[in-house]
Image (cartoon, rainbow, N blue to C red; front, side, top):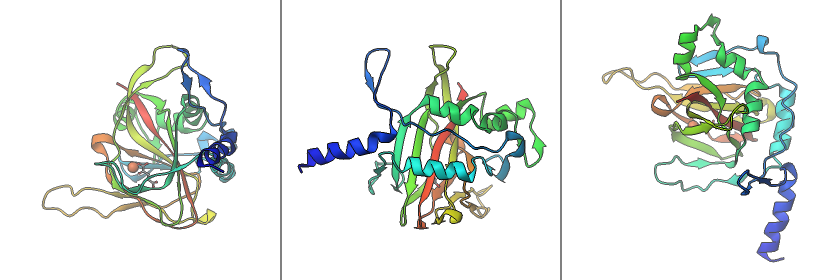
Length: 267
Ligand SMILES: O=C(O)CCC(=O)C(=O)O
Ligand SMILES: [Fe+2]
């Protein structure tokens, strides 16, 4: 078999999870979208809360997705055409060794936002039992939150793979809405990581570690903050100019699956 035929064969086997290609209003062919499974079963929003792993910087939501949902998603995500990132990164980018899949999917971003507890928890946050005022909420997220970035990223780290120390950039985007053909000018302010794996699914290592800065020149930096993997846990951390140096530690055994997006605020 020639390499071309091989490639075609591979593509047809991997596109089963993906809808056939779309045509944009201007007639341009757009890449196809995954047929994401239903986001259920879920825990009721009233049974979930935000916890500060590092106040004002790193927040988590345990059981954001149920174990059953994570399991069905991992089975689905494994059918997507994931691409192994090169070991040598672009200039200025962190060494990131994992398999990843990336897609612009505003409909899925919206399901992940309003079809789960996330919208409620972000719009009316209670952190460690403390309810935030509307003003504090706006300050926390860096503006009026519109929803999630349609840039959806899926990561699979196998044994030996990791994401070296780096900062996440804030991005300027156009936020699509169903109510208007004109998108809203927006920017991303916080990274969302949704963990689908943990030691309970056979994944060892792979923790996300944050390195807080020393409060002053002559002071020592606080100890690193370690987010241990938990199936179904969502983690939000500030990015852009307020991003802490962080990394995804090497996976020592099993696989680590993550879905990534970002919070978007009105510009
Ligand atoms: O996978 C992780 O633990 C970290 C991922 C990350 O830092 C990123 O997506 O920018
Ligand atoms: Fe990051």
